[in-house]
Image 1: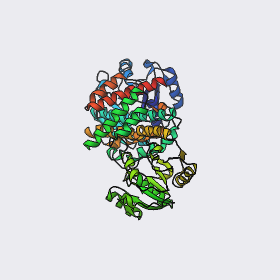
Image 2: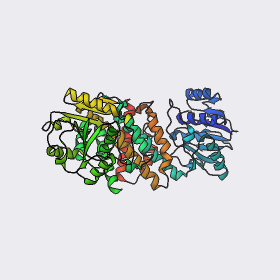
Image 3: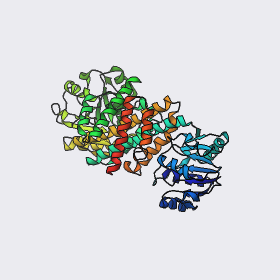
Image 4: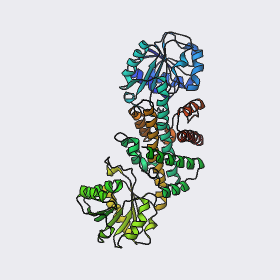
Length: 255
Length: 255
């Protein structure tokens, strides 16, 4: 398949590399930012441009891996063509493509990508959606070349999947960040809690999160909760501490 | 060493098993609850009791692995003796022992323990504190027999360590729990986000949490944040969603 990648950020980079590794032909990288276009184009040794009018019109697939807020404006500028147009966003409905193409689709890899960390695409669930059944099959087969877990997910379900991912990944990482700050402020290394982070993750491979829950909040130990609340200096972090403690207790009561 | 274990919950069970495996002699299990005392006593094939007055006075170490709120009352009841008295709690100061013994100590394994999940004690950091230098050495050597990571941590530092652990473990697990509920309410399996959970954990082995942060909140994408806020039904979870999104943004600005 001849593929154009629109975007050159973390998601674009990791997906383009996986597709290339699977033997697909990436014919062009487009990015508004010349340096990003150049970096990814040179890494893959394919042409790149920051001029949307230079994007070829004969590709089989246009993969839009750009910021949600930039998508609409790019769709307006790109030259109409007969390829499949697929975006890679968790929270954008497939119908965003309606004014521009009849071959609308979604190719959503459910993963967190950082520039400096390689990922094994094989284990990443790829969520596929397409307006046309034939395009759905094409994208399903393409995704299968880079991932062992390809699923058909509707726009409606994908919104909730993305919401769950924000809690499970972005908010989880923020818990690590707050913990890290507390440790460093008090002369302790973040390394000391890494075995705890590992076990917290490992547990939910065999227990449900509600079975795995431990700590002062699940039994609402007011003495510890009040003492820990006093230890926190930042007002916003204090509020987060209390609302999460209360919600853990609420969840433990209803299950 | 002759050891008495006071308590028969998750922490008591996992610690007692690790000590036994390392060849230490556990001479008695005490628990207020007969069934718990019996279960652990029979698992280790050692005497057990629910009568505090039956606890022998000739042990070298009394390890208190009970609920924080129960500790003071047990200390009042136990027959005075010459062994080391060590509690296993994150948030209790060593001076709780002052009225009862001069051989006060702390033996705090920094880990989350669940009954139905075995843990490898070798990688668990064990935080040691003791009023007497000789007791500190005894406990350090004992801990070294079951863990490769033994550290001297003061009561003051341990409070902050426990606070960090609540964020990194208990609150992280609650993020998993909310994600799980969102998925299940919308006909999606929790399994679909497990690769994302793994990568979220894996990342912080090579990146700092602030480097690893991704998602709509770090760039404060108001469009996604408002849409996701609308998807959440529970008022408390809505509040948590907003306060965490704002705090991620705040952290990203200051770093």
